[in-house]
Image (cartoon, rainbow, N blue to C red; front, side):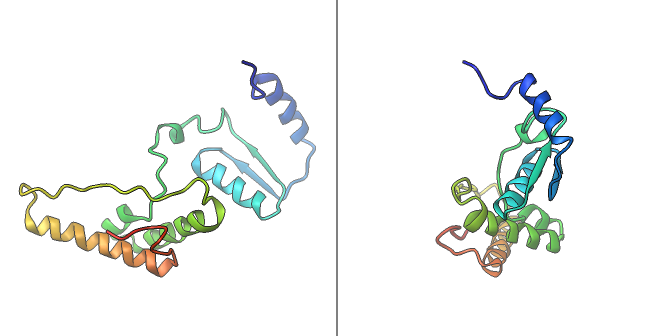
Length: 146
């Protein structure tokens, strides 16, 4: 099977890009870089995107590919970053990539081995995360609550 993504095409495209004038140059095509390139192009900007390797070659290919709303940041007290994550997740769910991003339910087993205080703290965190969901404008139909 022949792929249009090969070394010869890459060399040709890089040579062509050297003379192009673009609105946005994205360096690095991991999850963030690819998202920035897509967002800029979807807003009508001309984009050149380059990476030392192939798409998602580095850390992105090993990641879970999850778009999260910042619960891990909330847990460490980084409320501003958690808010920013919730807002970005909302944009991805509703405008930028609704065809790629969807809620995936999961079960967190709080067995009798989990101390009550820890279970209560976890649920409080989920409720705070849900408050960020609501504040960022994400409808409940797109992201069910805890």
